[in-house]
Picture 1 (cartoon, rainbow, N blue to C red):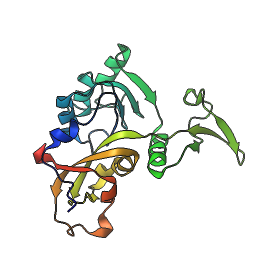
Picture 2: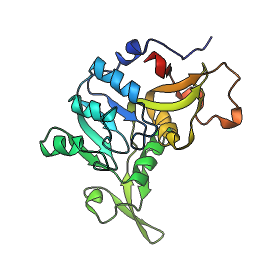
Picture 3: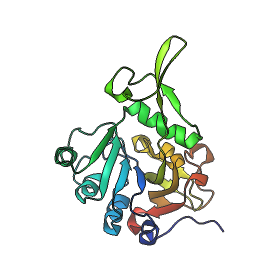
Length: 222
């Protein structure tokens, strides 16, 4: 019987080795798997590369992860935003690396990984520093930059409900990057507010099929 729900999240997170690339969902704190991230801090894998929309805001979750010193590099669209101060201090002190990716490109590159594409051409960033050193091409009279997929070893995402197969339903804007990150990682771990019996989720409402999910944990069990 397939059952991806676990109450022993520590044993799952302990499998994440040093040097891993980890995607975390969230638009600011909305849809951020805060409890999963903070549980990861307790495990302590080092030299992590983090892929997220922004470089932390508020006082929990990603902010604590950055302060822990476990992250060597972050790939994001908004390294500085409202409520974000930790990243700037770390970056100016030379304690963290940054790969700046426009938000549309970030989503596109994550989607490319989940779709099995080798690379994508995008007009965003052409003739800017973002395009320096990258292949460019004119297609139908328009200039494009070649961008490669963003692939992760692990994705930590947030959803509202899941069944034991790992089928997911999100709540409003908390969906954000969760669905595409789930497809772009080798192993996806999701924290949910509620687990339900198989068959209780409306098939028309399921956004992420369980085939992309390896582990489900309720917030109360983290």
